[in-house]
Amino acid sequence: IYILGIESSCDDTAAAVLCNGKIQSNIVATQQVHQQYGGVVPELASRAHQQNIVPVIHQAIAKANIGKKEISAIAFTRGPGLMGSLLVGTSFAKSLAMGLGIPLIEVNHMQAHILAHFIEEEGFKKPAFPFLAMTISGGHTQIVKVNDYFSMEVIGETTDDAVGEAFDKSAKILGLPYPGGPLVDKYANEGDPKAFKFPKPKVSGLNFSFSGFKTAVLYFIEKQTREDPDFIEKNLKDICASIQYTIVEILMDKLKKAVKETGINRVAIGGGVSANSGIRNALYDAEKRYKWQCFIPKFEYTTDNAAMIAIAGHYKYLKKEFSDFSTTAQARYKI
Ligand code: ATP
Ligand code: FE
Image (cartoon, rainbow, N blue to C red; front, side):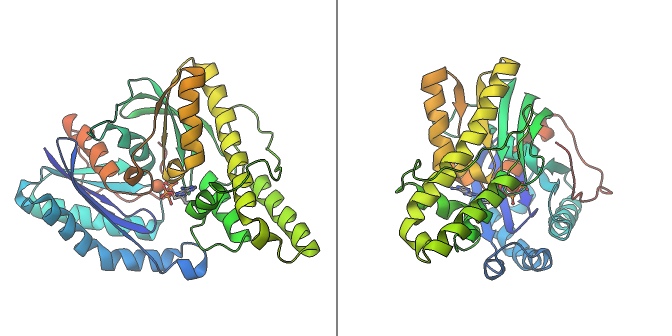
């Protein structure tokens, strides 16, 4: 079974080909135009998708070394995401499936971030059901009870900002370019995580909140730079390490609570922030300390990619869950 996956929900245009769940190609074109604005500009994102989608799909098919006729089905991101961005992938997927006379399969982007763990990869185990998945990305922060491939239950989520935003907004306050998450991670590795103390929010149950955290970082930096204009420059690594330490603690506190409440100790992470070394190390530690079974994705499957869309498509293909050609993109789309 050859599945072509297409992803265009935010600012990455991506296409991938899987053969029976194994990667044949995984192409991502990350849009650079947004950097100068310090965040994704939706209008520019959809235009860039229009430019990139044909070459990206050509590349994915060429790299997989197959002909278009060998593709069994087209899987695409229906949502959630930016409407203008989603429309490009959705329309393209529909036309291509129609032209080739093959099934069209719609995929939920957040389910795909979780199902990335089912891509056939040497040295990577697949989680057994049920398991807990913490999806930590640019737009979401959720703890999901995964009962089956497409039977998922959100048991906790953010009430305001996503954790990726907490990273990116903190980075912006420090004057780092967008998206700042990976840079905070990089500097954090050389800093002292206990150098500065940031507050952890008090949120009930398994929910999260990050808007207060961001404000706390802002006030702290404003106060310190009033006293010493070079404060950031002198302490960048320690600030980043302290920010990352606090965010990882916030995530791990809730994850521990979720494991306790559900009695499930198989824990997976997914989404862009699962590339973060702090959260990855915290999970390796939890394997030893609490005997959890942890599932940490390969780096290329953390931030947006089409391989995860293709694997979700693969499992829907096995169930013959095909979409109608009248299907539409959906900006808000529950797991
Ligand atoms: P969503 O999946 O919720 O629709 P998205 O698709 O825009 O949002 P992803 O591509 O999954 O988000 O993740 C992007 C986010 O991951 C950004 O906020 C980015 O800063 C963050 N990120 C990526 N790498 C790291 C890292 N090493 N440390 C911290 N954050 C990171
Ligand atoms: Fe994403």
